[in-house]
Length: 112
Image 1 (cartoon, rainbow, N blue to C red):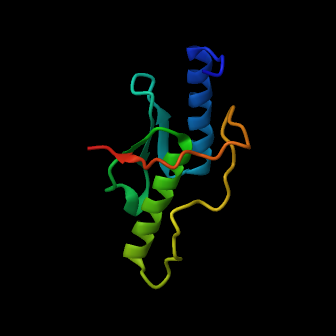
Image 2: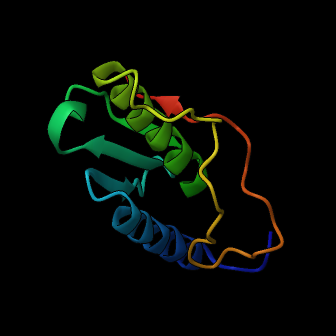
């Protein structure tokens, strides 16, 4: 471990979820204190039929949400949807994250 207590890690994850909520205004974002996962649920427009999403890291959650937004945009207007390469354009570190550590590449899980 990196020497941080469980309370410090939880506080950091809650802060990361808040930061992610600012980046994704059409989604309700939270960190599950019991699941130790990041969650997102769409709150607006054509994405409201989308299921909520669970991921291990805020980076995985953001990537999955952006992919879901892309798919919804492509379905609504295929000729206007820009190609999506599976990544968001620039990695911005979350609360307490080091810049020299790449985000996890594990895929997020869609909740059922």
